[in-house]
Image (cartoon, rainbow, N blue to C red; front, side, top):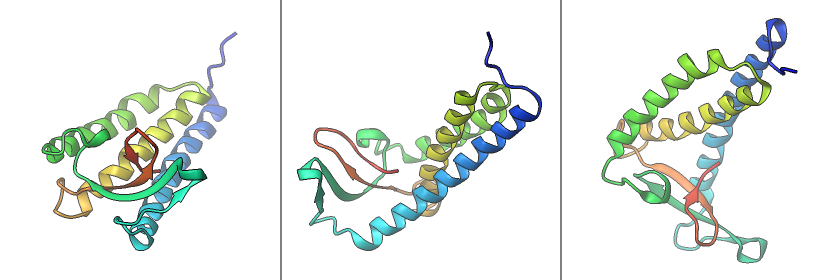
Length: 142
């Protein structure tokens, strides 16, 4: 039994994926603006008994700050990845969870790409706002 979507149902789930992508992008940018407005990088608040810290950083690299000297290359890769998901992956997705995943991936790529394009020090070199810190793990964002 295939759970492949078609027709109207497929269209509804594609719209759902787009809504997830746009909603995720909005949530990403709103939480980053709030983090920049309210968090002190030198005095991060702790939550959940110290398990979670809200540590504001501006990351020029990728996860775990890897590639911090390659911000432009990371930005170009993000543009290529965003295009690939929009043009190649999403049109071929035929399952509910594949489309939900596409929406989430698009939200994540576009949220950080917006930072890399519009934040200092300049276009395609901008630093990503990260603020969620778990013990022994990367500082990340929504």
